[in-house]
Length: 334
Image 1 (tube, rainbow, N blue to C red):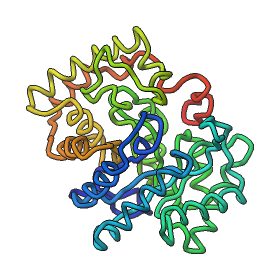
Image 2 (image 1 turned 90 degrees about the vertical axis):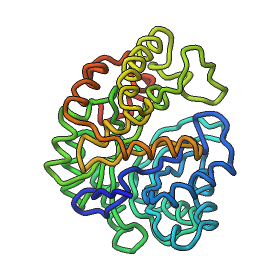
Image 3 (image 1 turned 45 degrees about the vertical axis):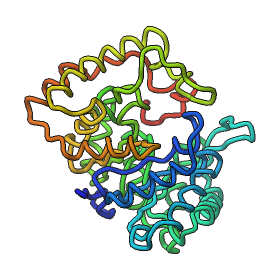
């Protein structure tokens, strides 16, 4: 497995990480046995970076990962590096209540995550969204205290803008920023990516297939199940969906020329953006994991990259990446 550095202060990790949210929440039902098998297959393939959030299924995802780690061979279990997001508040009906970045809350969240995961430390710990009522310095300072006590190894950030990144980095060493980045979500290229590169902060890119939109597997007439948040996502609505799938059709022609899948060429494009970028793939099955790993064998020349970006221009996507209420929580979009 190819590896990449997670910033200048973090560990080397597999060139692709596994994002586990869909195994517990927001994409409809998932198969628990297949989820565990997929986690085992990822570890067996050399994937080391496993990403989760304590609010994915209200703790379900951490418990699932803990189960998979306990049942994996010791050597594979020990290679896993756990990246955990915290701070999102939920209610018993699955609703969203805001974010909490207070120092006491940070330590409380960490205590529960350690228990659910069944580990003695978290490798990268990050606030999922900026709490507008708590200065980032206080939240990062609390995670730094957890680092000092050995409960956390590295501090990450999630979906914050350049000014917040600078304030956080002035408080404590920041390993990486987790943020959406794909062929059709390229907003970080303007100010965020130059800032992280200046400061030696890595990028863990989620949404590299835009929640399946540019995977090549999303049909024009597909009906989304109850509980799938894409049913409310602007990019999956009406004319927006049709326009975005036109982009996928253009990308499909380029993928066919290379003898690879649409998903593989989309992931390979993100991989090509720099050694400081580690894509997270949200595979929920071994089949999708195998496909995603195949992107590591796709090598794109400059002419290939130009063709891809001509087929899918940076500003061609129709619709915002989240509904308006959720976009309002993104410091990265301000």
